[in-house]
Image (cartoon, rainbow over all chains, first blue to last red; front, top):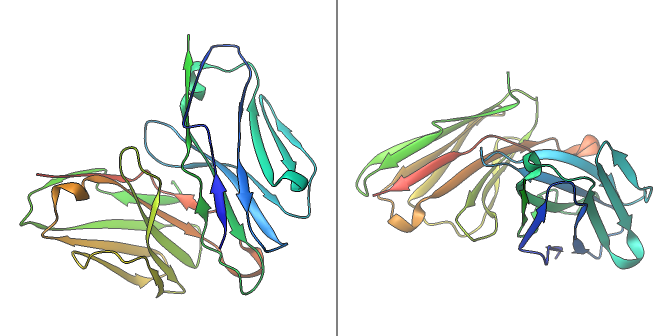
Length: 117
Length: 114
């Protein structure tokens, strides 16, 4: 069975600081997707990024960047120059791509990020 | 229009009431999910429908009853709930098959059982 661990329950930073949210996953499958979602106070989970297991290229999107390392089974998320609007709960998730694998997302427990002005 | 719409956004109900939560997706997806999110707890998968058939039920109490009349609509019927059922109920949809990808979520229904 697959598992996603977000060891950081809550992170508190001051605006403009950089912050990294950790995600470690476990699966025996070799083909899978990894995701990050943001849950602002409004409640819905907002999709941020999807990365498949064959693509280890890091990705940057504005102030957001993701570091995927298969060797350590990690998919970490960094916010550069954090802003108050980044305050939210962030979830890492995993689904399997193989035909017999579970397409149902497995979520981590989430990391609550609080950015102070 | 948003991809996944949930109604109502907020619901307060007594323990003897019967109510239903509604979810509608406009993304053409073929799988839909109900999740429960309680304070200080991880997301709990409740039900999964794939191609309108229930494929997973994570030992959810019978006071929660899902219904998926078609690929675009998902309901969660509630009856004789308990105060501990108060939570945010999130609906999601995704596409299965070769193009499988991310789940898209609705804004949730904040349920309070009194």
